[in-house]
Length: 69
Image 1 (cartoon, rainbow, N blue to C red):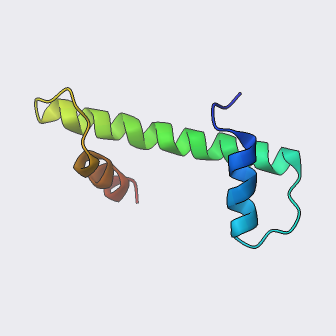
Image 2 (image 1 turned 135 degrees about the horizontal axis):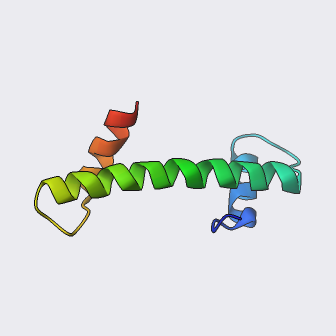
């Protein structure tokens, strides 16, 4: 079960050109996005801890994204 709202994911798919979106497609994308976001967040948290900080900064998130590419 995902914490991302299915309606928000539905809107994302529609903005990309989808005219109709099944609920199962929106749920599946929500799960994939959440898994990806958790992976990036874990890496960003690790970077902040390595720098001796408790606060995750935007730069940590950007670096985590670059490392995952």
